[in-house]
Length: 611
Ligand code: GCU
Image (tube, rainbow, N blue to C red; front, top):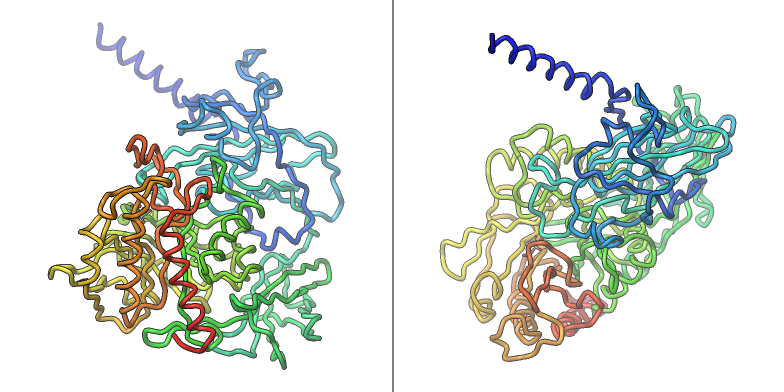
């Protein structure tokens, strides 16, 4: 008797669970975003930034309770147990962690809602554009599912044309930043997991047929041959008449459709001022089709390697860099927008940098556009960081998607010279295959830039002898090495006796070195956490590195102390990784001036034709 009753209860439970999970929750998702639209900053946009209502949803109730219905009762009940219009608000763009003390350490789902008025226009396609949402986002407009996206540092846009109403509209977005082993990044990044709508949210209005993506750059290794392509939404690109003009150079040409429907063009500009850190020249490029036009400020430069050397515009160059996380100076939370970009990059300029490594994920678009304007070359990276699920094809798909979104967004930024596919990934056949796939994708999407990765697996079987023989290097144009001699390994003086070698005839960038210091803490050079100890590490590092013949760049770890849940030494770290050359409030530590002196010497040598 007893057994059947249990079986009945079990099947009843299963039916009700399936009903709630899959059947009664209409609008279940998987609505991919529309292909990414490029050049948003030069498009007609309506900002949806500002105060958004929010509901914290630690138990993931919102889906089953249909929060996307924005408070409308459904089913048998005529009441709901949530509401947005009277709920508190969070500022967008911004992480939720440092806007509400109770959300500082929160990881999970937060529902965002805001209403806005919109006037529907004929012959117009309107997209809802997100600069980034960390980590998973689902978007509804007027209760209709619009799209979902995964990945916290790259943009996506959903086609809102059909769902938009003339007059009042309501957008609801659920954002979840739970860390999972098969994600990119995986579960243990040494940075703060800032959740939310961390970058701009915009409505973007386009003509019905519009210019979707485009590439305008110097052909690899040719200083006076500009080539490019344009992708439009037109069904028959061949019928499309698209012109490309560079008014300042009095250049104009028509793009011709190729087999794939890409419209291709080229120019041989008689005299072109090339983009360089010293002279970051940008030209206004205008692309116009029968129905659409877009203008973009673009710099023209070539970047190549030959042997162990790197050449910018055909001249050998040394990359004087610094690593940066996307955190503002003097304010808690995620950085975003022009002001934060200018403030961070100005510190890099003050150090004497001509290069920055944006770690470990694509930073806000305003950062790379600011680097274009200020004349800083950029290493841009996707967060394939340390232990990633290399065996999992889904995880590879996520990395591919982030790489594609990064390159699509930033392909016209002259400042970006390096795409990095990973940081400190442990050697294994699965890892090599995974990264080789990414390298292949990057080369297909952009055959003109250099491909790199920050490795840290050196063969150190002989004390004080570093051999960079990671098999991944074979697939790279430039290899990065993260080494922490004097901090995680040995003492600063070990650098004086360390030798460096590699079987590869390729340029190396020391993509990380350094040590921690608490600003204002002083003491003997041997005492960790003091400014003097950090200064000592930099002095020995610089003396050692400048002797390496195949070294073509350095980007020490890191410009500014940054938040990390891994750093919990009271009174010294207090939740911050203290390897910054400036404190979180912008106070310059002694090592700041050691690096500045080194870079000023290199700059002087470079301008006098040395190096
Ligand atoms: C690693 C890693 C960084 C980390 C740094 C550190 O090399 O790439 O993300 O913050 O070391 O330990 O400080």
